[in-house]
Length: 77
Ligand code: SF4
Image 1 (cartoon, rainbow, N blue to C red):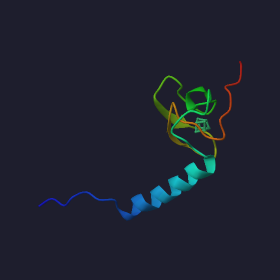
Image 2 (cartoon, rainbow, N blue to C red; image 1 turned 90 degrees about the vertical axis):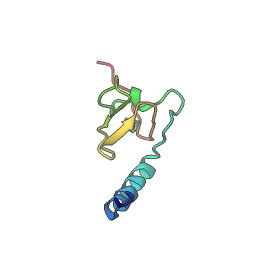
Image 3 (cartoon, rainbow, N blue to C red; image 1 turned 90 degrees about the horizontal axis):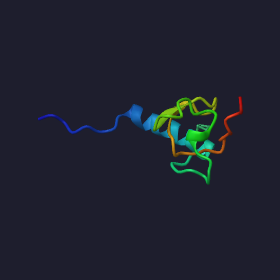
């Protein structure tokens, strides 16, 4: 019998770390008005549904429709 997959200790540790990180950022899986990751300067690849957020306090993958309190407008060139 192959055992059913289940979360390991590392998964619980990472879940807690990521939960803290998301909580500090007030990270939401929805836009805040017109503000969303897709239109934030820290969203690395705006044409993709999921991209790396390079904000120094995050550095995680986020969705284009997500939002956090560190949203910043993309500066005009
Ligand atoms: S800083 Fe916040 S709003 Fe901007 S891309 Fe990262 S998670 Fe999204």
